[in-house]
Length: 167
Image 1 (cartoon, helix red, strand yellow):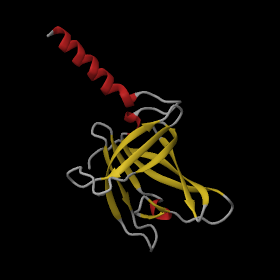
Image 2 (tube, helix red, strand yellow; image 1 turned 30 degrees about the horizontal axis):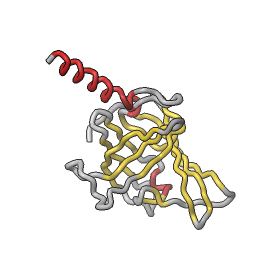
Image 3 (cartoon, rainbow, N blue to C red; image 1 turned 90 degrees about the vertical axis):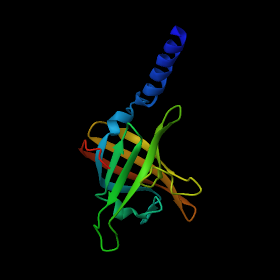
């Protein structure tokens, strides 16, 4: 019985602390807790004008000023698009998120879910963004995309606006 308790405690510590540790300067999941506003969306790549349809939801300019919420204890969240341009519709999407770590980089990935936290995509597809920087007040996420054979990068700069975590 004593061994079983010891093993259970050890397993709980390993599982509970797994994604809370830092990876190459990128903090763990608790730093994400709260609401984040997209302040800026930038494009990098070959010279030209870019337009990106992001997350199978809307054009990139519709994500400017959107608010993203991350709840670390159950890995859920949502983002809300506000109608900042005439061609953008206000909408909210719920998601389940997680970290994906390589040896050198940390990514945040998410899949759309319904009110019962079940995936709404029958193919179980999701999205992944590289975390370029993250601290208690600012975050930069980077996505590599391609348009007509030309690669480019979208960078979303966000700032924390509250510690609210109510869906």
